[in-house]
Picture 1 (cartoon, rainbow, N blue to C red):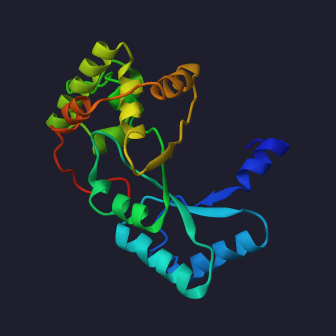
Picture 2 (tube, rainbow, N blue to C red):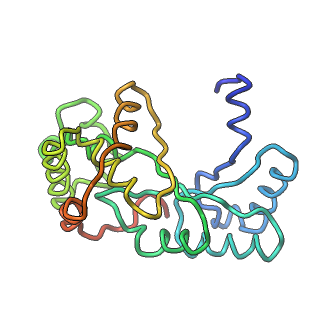
Length: 218
């Protein structure tokens, strides 16, 4: 982990809990109070949460308000063109409560169009990515990817750029987490800002979606 002043200033801005705080080993009250103390001590300015059930997040917000503790300001959840279950409860809850939604890019490789149903794909990463295999790879998922590739070709952009642009068109999304490990990832993120998807494009990308089991948290 870098120890530069710039990194330290960023790290103190928002502390994000990366797992559900509702488990029996980490009761809500104790965890939320501890997070409040982190903010009071000046070690973070805000706190954020990540994937959990909407009822768990609603309970967290309620307890924070009830006790006068620091409220979560952000939700980092699992959401993309081939996994949209968050539209049912979590995203409406975040809009109603004024909570920003940020999103990571673990879907990037799948929606970039370089995965295949037969033998998982051409790269070593594609063949051994058990995490992605457990989450995607339904027939409808590949059909959606085909449409992403088609729209990308028509607009003159890469599939990854179009998939990210779709996210940026969603009213609940405040910002993506780029998670760049290659220059191409940064270039895709910047290019996605300039892509304007019309209503026909959005419908075309969305209409084949099929419900999934809850994924990314338990």
